[in-house]
Amino acid sequence: MRWPSRRADARPRPAVRLALVWAAALAACVLFLTLGIQGPVEYALTRRATVLGAMVVAAFAHGVGTVLFHTATGNRILTPSIIGFDSMYTLMQTLTVFLFGATAIATSESIPKLLLQTGLMVAASTLLYGWLLGGRRGSVMMLLLVGVVLGLAFDSVSSFLQRLLSPTEHDILSIELFGRISAVPVEYLPLALAVCAAVAVVVWRRVHRLDVLLLGRDQATCLGVHHRRELTVVLLLVAVLVAFATALLGPMTFFGFLVATLAYRLAGDHRHRAVLPMAFGLGLLALALSQTVMEHVFDANGVLTVIIEAVGGIVFLVLLFTSRRAL
Image (tube, rainbow, N blue to C red):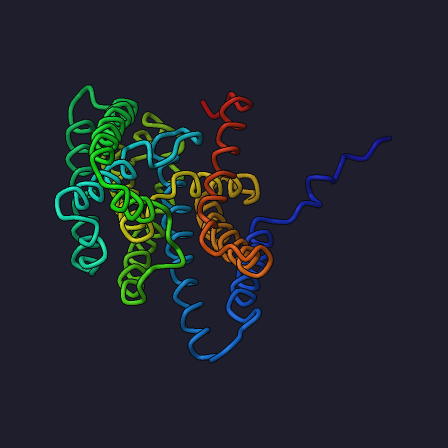
């Protein structure tokens, strides 16, 4: 007589997995804050705490935003940047340099500029959602197609304007368009963390409705969920997170996709109450550990986002060509 296999029972529970990931993330944060401090301790801790705060914002905004976007679209192979946030941010920065010169970027860095950029991107996405989801023929796929077209249009205009810039202005603009986790002004962090906390409260109160959205429009409607309204709310939350993170930290196209993909495989549960904290924790672990390694092993402080984007792009291509269920 053969006994039933207990291999599945030996796997850690979702709560245990989440606790292990967050323990590793907190350990990586402590290691980043304390490893190799030289000179004044207070100055070093202040600087590293600012970078760590930017990592928290990036991990939450991109990790949670990508999971929510996958829930809204019903497709795990997409990223929120497909709507055109990165392209719109690039166009705004290019227009600023083209119209006012390269010094305008440095002299205009302020909270009002951050709020203005975020507000423009959120307003554009709100108009897009209301237009494409409000009609009878509106659908998520139509929204994605229009987002792709707008993103290509923004990129074309940005490329044309960048060719008209001087070499110095183009170099300064190129620096601005890279992810800049290690160069976020400290006065921006309270506002950024407050935005993330507010979105977290809204998301957590709707976590069960998010699980129902995974079932599709017909099943969600049968279970009493107003599908279009919940879909619009989720997409607006994604717009706030991605737009704010892009305006604060610069474009990071594949980072959220990378941590969300890992979260689906490591959470051990399809429900959002397990996947969302897992994506947040994995994002923070990846950023803190990678930044520590880049600074103290390779002495390359400014290339973290480039490497993460490269790894995320490779994972994206692998899943695109190997996973039929994602398409």
